[in-house]
Length: 511
Image: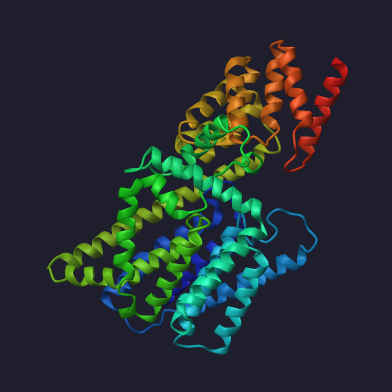
């Protein structure tokens, strides 16, 4: 009976993490898939932990069957999306039920790694077919990181049969060819890494704290362009939220001290891989694929990666030895039971409370999209007491206040949020609030900051034009209008065309 519960919970967590639609919750960092997969996994971990400690028998853990089903679902979802969008110019054409291709691609790589590890001991027709389907899906996503990861994992598994020289040459050819397939994307990542290294140098020992990248990266990018206005990276700059490298992310957040601790922990967990069970070996291989994927992307953003990492820890020989050593002492057993029970109840309570709040926010934001009034503001005020430390909520709240016309309150929230979040969109919103309040000097300063964050964008210059025009500085306004008209367009859009048309009209009327 207990294994039936374990199987149901892990299956539910996987389904939520992989197949639940991303846009069901508006929080850009959590999403519904995060909330509900965390809920099921919160229940799964303690029950599975007890199974491992006490060695319950009379059941089977259908983990490989669940991963097989997930791999099939992801592969067919990818193929369906690919063939139904042929001819589309959508930026992230193949992304499954994720916010972009990285989530889908990293999940495909994890499923591939687990089933490839299983195939070493039990290669049947079903596993072989699913592996082929996953490889096809990886190619269809056009994710270079996923292609590299699947190749590296395959080489690692069959390394005994391939000479090192051939592996080295093939790796160089693969990396070089994938880099030049989309050279602008490759150069863009190199620029992000360059600024990330500057952040590490700024605080090398203990880092910038949790979420250090999102707090400060865009300010480092702004500072770079302030001193390098003619940089070749100017046209590639974007509103960057992740460093495209998990090691850099760790170094930025926790410095060399924290990163070294995490690396040592991973070593202790994975060093006895040959002594572990088949499940542990496959989970360790999946962890290896997450590390490979993390060299060029951000798998830690997605709950499926965390699910696999936590399972790897629970299954590891290192933790098994800790349990065995602990149970030699009397009273430990009761303490473990009581702690697991209390912590599980508390964790489930927090998860349910969080889901209720997020759902309320989602419904409120949906209503706000149709009609804005003082009633909506009061509802947001009540949620603010609960979610005042949630950066995404605070940004959403400040947008609502701005649309209602409460610029003073929106400005206040934006200013407090700027200390916790470095973001181009936040700069634009903050500057607009100051513009509406006729505080032109501060508005000018923040619009210039936003323009240096992303020099290829039109909106900051458009904001500067209105700052100069409204305060009567018509020469500067004309200069900015000329810049906008002559500016190279990176991504064409209706907004960009409207801005250019308005500036042309202004210049024509003033000539």
